[in-house]
Image (cartoon, rainbow, N blue to C red; front, side, top):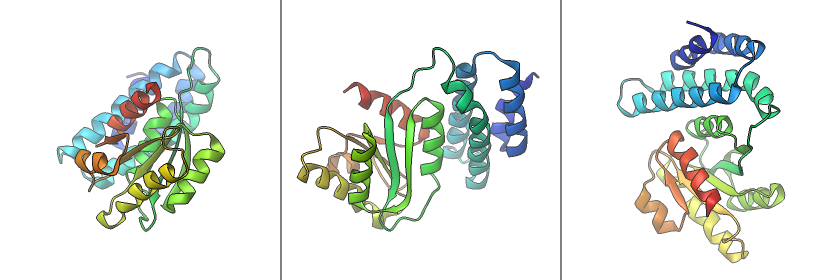
Length: 211
């Protein structure tokens, strides 16, 4: 296999050092880095699907996500300065107040970045007002809220209500997701969309930019 195929496999296998080294080889070899990134994104989608089918477990998925991150740290800067690479929208993303989990959110961030989105990562335990302040400050198109706890799910609704109070609801889209969430819940709180996994998050973000 060539460097590209080996890189894809390294990400799937969660081999972080190999992913970084092979990414450097791919960059040095030239070619279409956008295509490479799309294939890496597809690889992460495959990993996510395997996780959903219980073929792999959380540690394996996180290793793959970390390998993807290492590869994109090498490829991303080169790709964005290349000709014909279209930057997409800006997403402010974080976990709501009380939720300390990076898992899930960081996978979504990696895949969104790989798909051309600019990301402002607020981290975990983010107050509802902070989501809005940062979205205004950075002129973000979308606020993304990821929660892995049922007890912190109300934080997403608080963000939406604050946007309404400040007269900003029509200006900033809100997408939500996370293990305990559902489409029905997202509709109930008035979110613009819900994503079950990272690949759906990319598709959703692209759709929201068109509205």
